[in-house]
Length: 315
Image (cartoon, rainbow, N blue to C red):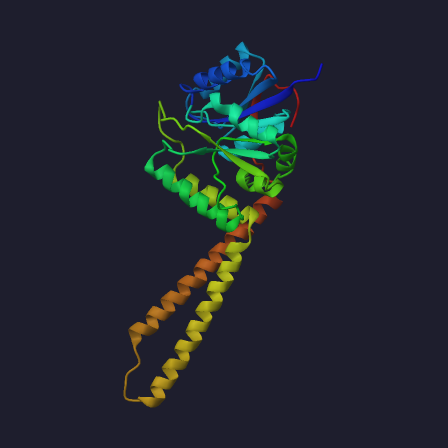
């Protein structure tokens, strides 16, 4: 008898004590109807301020298929995903949210595409039920990944996705301090597909993504996987230098032709402020890269695990 393929679900958890049980029950019901697969579930608590880990502990006690991981402090969604990926051993790994907005009962659509031969599959939402702020963040993230990471324009990226084992094995080789899961998937393969799924309204609470977290996520993406910002900075610096040089020639010629015309103090100050600001911006960008290199060289961890439940393997 052929062994069943195993599906590992990885769910980062933050402020989800009220929504998590329903998500787990939905996964159970769906996987029980798909007898060709076996499965397990990895719940990673990102130091949630509510009783999320208490709920995880209870769920793990009821079902050995459910594994719990508790972070010592908040490290972010992508670090939580990396912890779950490292502990998973499924032939396919499915990542989804803890709030019930990503429909676990449509996981067969993602798995079907993997069976067709794709290496990674992302859920595509026709109508997203996020807030206007979160949708704006998604659009900015979409533009950033396309420009900085070379994401195909037609590929839709979401937090609900499935990947094959070899992609996971390549992703977990990344041990630097600032993981960015989308960049890691794109680094491993470009054989990626989209499947349409529904996106539900959030039944409880609000999104844990703040403006600071979104900006930090974008910085992680382009500083860890692209040098294009440095090249853009070089181009802007070169353009500014040419403009400054031409303006200097214009000033000299104007002075020679019209010696009685006083030199403009305001225009001079404007030029100084403009070019000074550009220089500070470029230095700040370079400093961001250097700072992240320094932190990575100090072996700053992606995450620190306080406790594991139903897990024996150390990863």
